[in-house]
Amino acid sequence: MSILLFGSRGFIGTHMQRRFPDAIASNIDIADSTAVAEEFDHIRPDIAINCVGKTGTPNVDWCEDHKEETFRSNVTGPLVLMEECRKRGIYWVHISSGCVYSGDNGGRGYSEDDAPNFQGSFYSRTKQWTDAMLNEFADPAEGKGGILMLRIRMPFQPENHPKNLLTKIAKFTKVIDVQNSVTYIPDFLDAVSTLIDRRRTGIFHMVNPGSISLYDVACRFANAEGRPHPERLPEYLAKSMTKAARSNCVLSTEKLSSEGICLPNAMKRMEEILERRARTSFVSAEK
Ligand SMILES: NC(=O)c1ccc[n+]([C@@H]2O[C@H](COP(=O)([O-])OP(=O)(O)OC[C@H]3O[C@@H](n4cnc5c(N)ncnc54)[C@H](OP(=O)(O)O)[C@@H]3O)[C@@H](O)[C@H]2O)c1
Image (cartoon, rainbow, N blue to C red):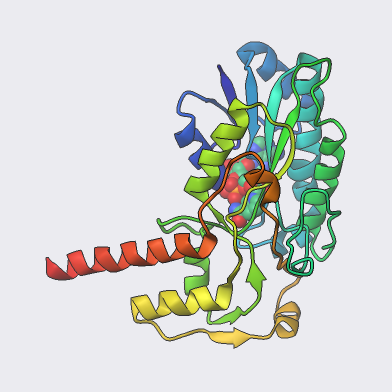
């Protein structure tokens, strides 16, 4: 099974390359339809994985001022992949975002069938436009191909990285106290492998069950690392501090568990990282 991986040098793409070490990394511009067609004809992969995207540096506010670049990577590129994969009957995986919702849907969490209800940032709008268009073509054409679309949220991992939620909130002096769904990257990668093996198509919410408050998590990590607690930031004030609004939402994991994929609880994963850090600092203190 040969895999062609787009966006392998990015945060999620690097993880995907490690999970699928034989995947062939392509660094072409995915919005360049000629280059994409040539790449597919040259490599002839069984599967393509798209980890390309503009999320903004240092954050999604960047996308408000760089709409053309954001649109090219988040909308035009995936549409080119859709067309070129469909022509060749190639099954492909697209990384999307859960930041297309706001709220917790009355405690139930938003399911894959719920229409996005968050329009507050250009980044989020590009993700939902693309999801809607790709979803129309998610089913295999003439029994071949199809698109698997994976919505992740606030990814986190044990190791520090500028895009790791835990690395980010350790730097915040003010944090909101709102429930959110989050994705533990190693669990996500396990689930992706299973869904790919089964050639599943359509949208999947790829978050760990249970929601967390960023404020609560920030306080726990501050305690463990001997830092002062951040200030609790009211949501209405947070909105006035950034150019684009931020999505705060809880997603349902029912569709994933109906596949028999039951990821560990989000807070349990956070606590494991805390314990691991405490053990590491204990060991280094002993030395
Ligand atoms: N990180 C998160 O918190 C998060 C949360 C939810 C969803 N996601 C989704 O996950 C996906 C990957 O995000 P990420 O965090 O891994 O982003 P990232 O670290 O910025 O990586 C994205 C990669 O895509 C490349 N790229 C951008 N435009 C391209 C184009 N037109 N053609 C080819 N390559 C292009 C980038 O290269 P350059 O650096 O050279 O531009 C970069 O290597 C995105 O779809 C994002 O929406 C991320």
